[in-house]
Every structure is written in C-alpha cells, then in structure tokens.
Image (cartoon, rainbow, N blue to C red):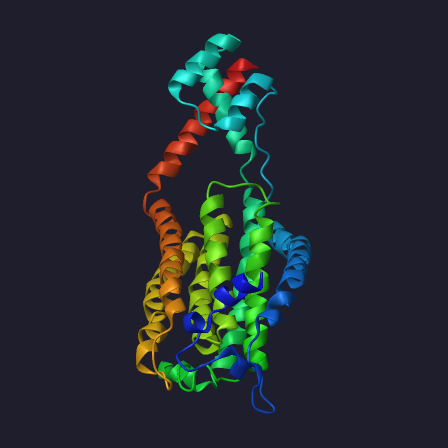
Length: 347
C-alpha cells in the first residue's frame, strides 16, 4: 500500500524539478500550503448542500414558480402492463420489428403499443416545475459563488497578470478565501454527483456524470498541487457563463421568451470567450517557473480539460440547436396531440 501511495504521489510527476513534498510540509511561519486532507470536509458539506437545496426549492423556488404561474404538469400515465414493462426496462424505444411482435403478442394495435411506450417515457420526464426549481437553485449558487470569487480575485495580482499564477510556484501561501472557494465548489459538484442518483434519471445522465467527475478531479488535483491561483481563475470564468444559461432556462420555463433569448445570446458570447481565455494561464505555465521545467501531471490534465470542454460544448450546442430549430418541438407537440386524440377514442 505504501508503495502504491509513493508511486501515486511521485515528486517527479507532481512537482517541478528540485522540489520535494517535504519542503511543502513546512511552510514559513504564519503561512500554510494546501494539503489533500483539507478536502475531506467537502463530502459532509456536500450532504449539507443537498439539504440546503431541498429547503431552497420548497421555501423559495416553488413559491416563485407559483407566482410565475408554473404549475406541476400532470402527465398521462401508461396503463399497467407487465409484458411491456419488462421490455421497457431493457429498451425505452424498441424498434418497429419489436413493436409489431408485441402488438401480435398482446393483440393490440401497433399504434396503441407505440403510444404506450411514449406515455411510459413521458412518465419519467421531470415536470417544468421540477426543472424550474433545479435551475433556480443552480442560478442562486453560481451567482453567489461568482460574486464571492470576484470579491477575492479583484485584489489579487494574478487576476490582472496571469503570469503571477506561476511566480514562486509551488511555494505560494494558501489564503482563507482560496480555501473557502475550493471547498464550496467541490461540495457543490459532489452534491450534483450524488443528486443524479436520487433525481429522476434523464437522457444526459452519463454525459453529466462524466462532466461532474472530470470537474471534481481537476479541482481536487489543482488544490493538492497548489495551483490555486490558476484554479480560482478557471473556476470563476467557468461559472460566469453558467449564470446566464440558468437564467435563460428560468425565463424559458416561465415563458418570457424575450428575456430567454437575450440571456441565451449573452451566455453564448461569454461561454466562448471564457472557454478560450481560461487556457491562457496554462499556456503560460512553461514560461514562468522560477525553478524550471514543466509538470508531467499537467499533460494528464489537458485531456481532462478538453473532455470537460467537449461535454460543455456538446450540451450547450444541443441547447442552441433546440432554440434554433423550434420545428422539432412543434412536431413533438403535434405528435402528443395525436396521442391524446387516440386516447380519447379508446375511452
């Protein structure tokens, strides 16, 4: 076990040449360096964030939704059928050949079998009220944590000159603001990870799971390796765009289309600017060592960073596609209307 630990925390992998972990264990008097043990508090705090989210949604978000006349939609439920439930457990959208086989087995019309699967899929979809509450919670967190980050970074020299991120690295003292910021971000993303398994399962479950896992990994390793200056900048610009994304979602759920479109345009501009800007501190990493040499672990983080950017880009591009091509939603509405008419005929 000790051998595996020593291999994982290899100084040649994590630290610049001629720097040892022992040097970081004994900071100058009055200063402190980040340690992996500091992040243990994030896990219990994540459960606290989950509890806070429940209270926020019940006491704040739902009353706001009621004021905006967003009510929990009552979706039609598929009639109980053990045979179709077993098929649904393996595939939510069976192909036409499977549908025809089920039609013969149950002595149902093909259209009726298709309608059953569509109704069954819709049962598991979150209501507009649920999505509104979740987006309002994320908007509140992103806004609060962004304001906290700006307050901390505004007086930090590395916000205005990113080369300062690497001066005297890794011997950079940990400030209370940096610690609080990292712990809050990690606790929030851990809570998002946990809530995926308790919330209604969605189509983007795997995509968001990979996103949260990559984010947690990058935040954790940047803290352990004392890359706090670059890390705080990256997290700050990352959260800036998400504020307007959640605002656009809220406006869309409340049917304020003009606000939704404006917020989405602002989000798109900020998203692409910040995703390009946040690579700047990493581009400068090789030019600013005071003790020389690049870190090997950065080469491992680059794929994670690109993975995170790719997942972000995929999700945001999908959202942009839905806003640009409303004909798809119109087609879905027409299809649902046909289903309702067929249901009325069956009664």
